[in-house]
Length: 241
Image (tube, rainbow, N blue to C red; front, side, top):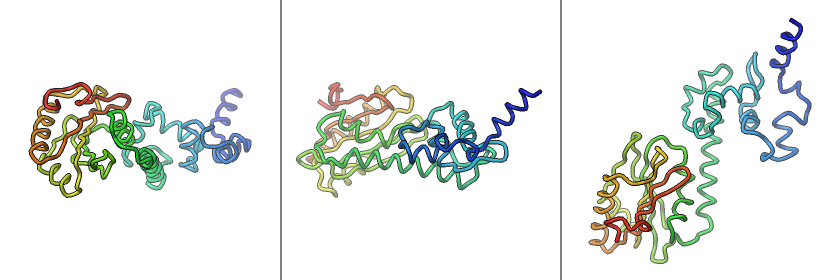
């Protein structure tokens, strides 16, 4: 019984009971955010636990629901977060806001260098921060000037998980309105396999033909997964050559 009582006392330990070097917030300030585990960083956001668990333990419980994967936590809605005792709407909003800030930071970093977009790898690096971890398909268009510098990136559509539709006239009108000369189509495959479907190939061929008729160039169609990509131009898929 004494061993059980000791265990229960330890698991009920609050963050204030930890030595200062072990408290996530103090550790972050003293050693930098990079020294903290995912659970400790999440605990900093949560700030407090509940009457049974510390913020660190609550963070571990939340990560446990997500199988320890941040991409699953990113896709978790606020309602499911709030179902965990100790997480209310305020804590859920803080976590979701942190993820969105991180996503925007990564996108800002990827385009701030103002380098011309001339490779599929470059497209992948620009768009991965926006598309990584999504469980549905999104289709984007990158509009480029004569020197292949990015003028604007626009989300065209957001699908329900298996497919997304491209409105060719919308893409062409957008390119002409922004004085673009080059177009790159980008969409993601949540399945993890970036190889294009027959529908992807058909839509690409249609857009390539329509763009050429308007004096525009469809430079590539890049299909992105979380850790790889497929380039229509580099693979010389019919309709792009």
